[in-house]
Amino acid sequence: LGRLLVSAGLIAGSAWLVHRHFAELDLRSVGAEVADLAGWQWAGAALATLVAFIAVAGQEREIVRAMGLAAPRVGRVGAAAAAVSQTLGFGPVIGAILRRRLRPDLTVAQSVAISGTITLAFFAGIGLLGAGALILTPEMGWAREGALALVGLIGLGTLAFRAFPVWPFGLVRPAPQVVLRLLVWIVLDVGMLCLAFHLLLPQSAALPGLSFLPIFILALAFGLVSGSPAG
Image (cartoon, rainbow, N blue to C red; front, side, top):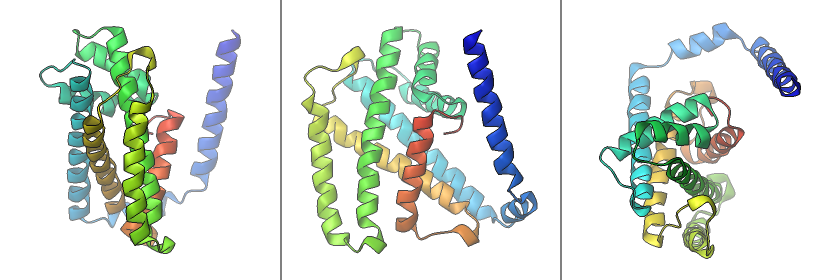
């Protein structure tokens, strides 16, 4: 009963906060901004989202291959797990459950290991990307030094993946070349998501790409960490 009361209180509090924030929105202005979006913006955002899912599938393939669990259409499983888990929230948990349902050949432990490894790799990658984006932001004025620092961060991140002699819960410890390929997929994934969002921004809220990227990455990271539906 105590848990039910706590859950009900959290739901009620969240509903009140959502209602409060929605009350501050001018829905007519929002509708007008959306109506002003051109067809090419919607098409570009849809294409960028498709490429992002291709990148998600690439991340899945790299991880399961490193774990020795490769199977046909594994990329599609990863893309489906990402789509559903990020929509419903609690990504690593929902992702593990969905992988177990879509791939009966996996054990529960293997599904959890895949989901956990992908989550750790993604947040490591997004951390490096976010740091690089901050350094390379035009307002910082450190473009050349930032590029060198970013190379150093990538190297340190690669070493960090190899630093732990034992990983818990069966999480895989990828080889450096796997880490680098994962980083490429993650950069493509986040970059395309950022592009899709940027294309759909109203003109009044648009920012230059390099200035917008660190803001987007930070918001994306907090959304995913929160486990909230739709991130």
